[in-house]
Length: 592
Image 1: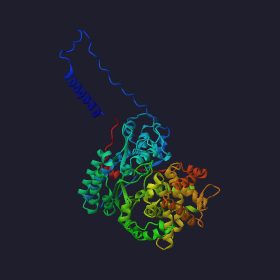
Image 2: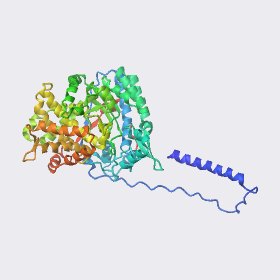
Image 3: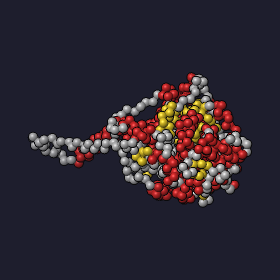
Image 4: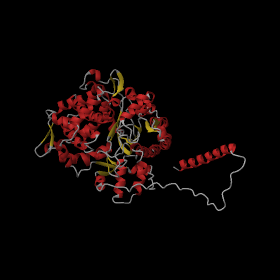
């Protein structure tokens, strides 16, 4: 702002000189008469002072909303790490902290200014308002369909990626008139802005967030210099370069090859935040420490991926047999998360990268956050099951079933349609389903995970006990996920599973309102539901997906009532990272 005003003053001064010079060339030889003596000097008109922003308003129950998230310290065993790897860990955490600020802007460009006002706010429930703003990365409650809990500004589907008033029709009309802009506008690594003239233009992430990505890249380079592990060094160096070039392919390949005690995932990946099209990726980070013994137990599942693809309940022409099958699996403990990986409901695992070029060449890597999984199982899933499942179902609840469901959910993301043909053209599922891709893909992975476990168990590849423990553990998990917001897009995917399976008779409710899995009908119902999700993706059927979610994605009164019985159970955890605070202390922004 100061720079703008200074430039304005200089411009006006130069303009004045130019006018004077021009006037001098045409002025009469005689100078104008002097003003009469005693004439008062002209008084400069002061610039009007902008009105102060309205006072902040905070919902009265914000403390109760914060209490939905159980504060939980997460740690990892780093005692065996040499000093070089601890240094790499610390620098990776420092880089990740900067992505918190990038993501804050991606959620909404007005967030940094509002954050300053929230920090300075000293009204009722001030501490809770600050904490809930930090949990949600903004003033909208992610558990309540993005209702504002600070102020009354509606949540923009455009997030911070597009002009807030841009519609899908305007975006498509612009591309129809300017086809040369298509790749840049639909890129996952650009923002769209509007000039004063009304023209739209794209700006790559490396320019939009340069003030944060440049120092983040420097921290990654320092981490690379510290580590003695060549695969980690290569990933960190190539990812630092990608932050400044917007070309993530080489570093995605390097991440697939990463095999180190310190496992770092950092960059722009998921598109959930883009509610307009689902094109734009959000920055996130997971700084973790590998648990080699747990990772080695799961290595055998990589060999099953080709068979799992062939076993999908869809016609052969829709099966994706071109993806790479390296698919490493890592079990890790989380030391620090950032950005899209730390908002509200916490991630327990992920399957990356999302670039179909990398998936076809190398496959995808599955990373399971062991300490996060254990915390959620003990603090959330078990209490939920006790309140929602029939008594005879409870003895079959098991952490191993929960762990394996999460694993095969992530494996499921790497199976099924990816690149497809629609109307004779090569395209991708995510491009065709747009903002509906995330809920349908997550639901597909949920159901495919169960389907694959049942199939592998019958083949003798997994313990037979899972046949008894997976169905009720999965059902309890649906209640857990439904609490994340049954009225928003992601929640619709969860609710659609519940309603479809209940329609098929695979889920039943007892007279006391408790639920159970109907074993005789469950496997076939899972197969039918999986076929429905996979075929919507295989056809790139946006209209069909919208109709499916409209039919099955609406919570019934009985489901709402069951969720209502869970008010004393935390919705999720609020992770605390004491080791990260020791290794790379956070610089807390001052209230201004």
